[in-house]
Length: 494
Image 1 (cartoon, rainbow, N blue to C red):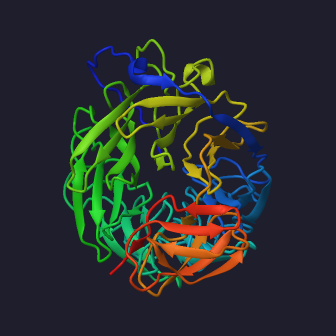
Image 2: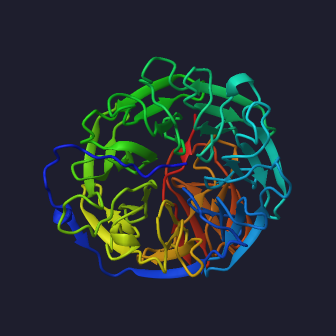
């Protein structure tokens, strides 16, 4: 389970956390739903996924009909429907405790992982699963971890999945692998459940390549996967964590090891690749003020700390910007980065630790606090954000709300509608999915100015084919009410 770092930096200077934070104006926060346990409880490390039908899909680590977690959908207005409840019969052959969100794959189904259950032969009650679930709630268990001796195939996946250009899915496990340290793996699995271990962590003493990968991989524009490990690397009494690159064939490269003094952060989370092609991420701990950091890192491994959060009990005058950003970042259509913190904000909440915040950060490092949770609208925010194609940000909190089992909320920054992709890369002739709204009556779809053949499946989903002669660029969709442009370029693969 993702830890909120107990990092303490000896001899740190008494610096003020609020020095570079500003207050933001003009946003509208709405509490949409409170989980009541029967429909799920404690969404953990989850970002919502926009479906083809325009609603949002996610998982909860607990609750549901059997108390072992759920898959749910929620409308933009906040109506929650449980699609599947895990573990209808002990000892949970279908898995339990999904600790990550869902991947919407190109076949229209959702794919995910569970941290426990599955009854792997070498793991007692089970070390987790990979599953597929339809929008109608039909679940298929594709793989049960720890089938191999000593869990050489990995165990306890905390991260979700990402779909590669080859159509396969890639993910990580928190422990297992071929090393004696059982420090986790990176794997590839196809839609039939055939799993291949691509890398086992900690193959050398002191784990210079990392230990305990917990965050999602990302597929970068160079065709490679990038990820982080929570610990390992160098220093920090077991390592402060690493950032790595992995080719689809399994060639592994460590790009960065967070250092011994923790000034650049410790315990990194998920990465994103922004429009400037540089990677951005967060660390739970470390930094100048002990409360975690936001950083940028190039493909060559040059890391720059953009912002240091203030730990909740660090001697700061104020802590409005929050601390311990467990979840990763998103880049919204205004070009800014958005994220959440687990602690901090209103220090009258949560026994002086704060209930967490939502923040905005420019790519130059200027931070604005957008919302401070007060418990009634959320608490212990370990979940990331989604910018839906209506322009609004959506997220969840692990606890708090009316029943104390977590919440779903929205934050409207006044950003306009756009279109996005089920998968943002493909080859000429391949058909992919476009998500948005108002598609009925669409007259044209083009990729970087080249017209594409398309089919309007519904008001919120279009199928389009990568046209001959197209190059990487933005997609535009002409609807009866205007032209919508994609939030990111579509990458044409040679």
